[in-house]
Image (cartoon, rainbow, N blue to C red; front, top):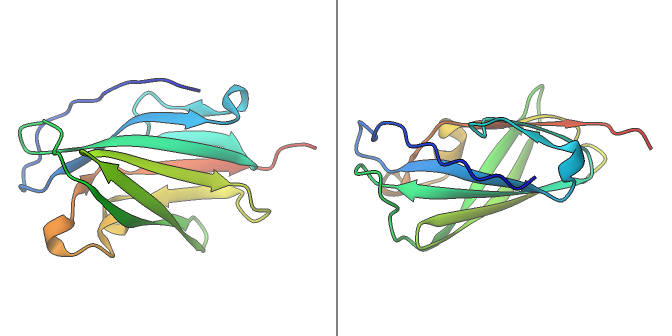
Length: 138
């Protein structure tokens, strides 16, 4: 499911850059649904999602930053996971495999969790995203 929709909302008000998801690709596209704003994704267990995002400054332009950071995710009802975000020239890529037997459920990442392990100078605004992973019939 390759779709590109760039949402260009208002500039951040607190001076922090804004992380904006611009694409979600699935290795199981026919069984994956992605909302137009990328805030809600549904896929079967066994799917790997690849997120692409942009780190935008207060002027809305992509910041030419290269870095990697840990992206904690939490499972509704308890449980945590960790993904690695890789940033090149302000374009962030996160590969999220939902392939383990315990991966079904609702996985969340929001501004608080994304910033939890980042120093204040690297924190960002983020709208958030939920990935709903369901048990697929064999």
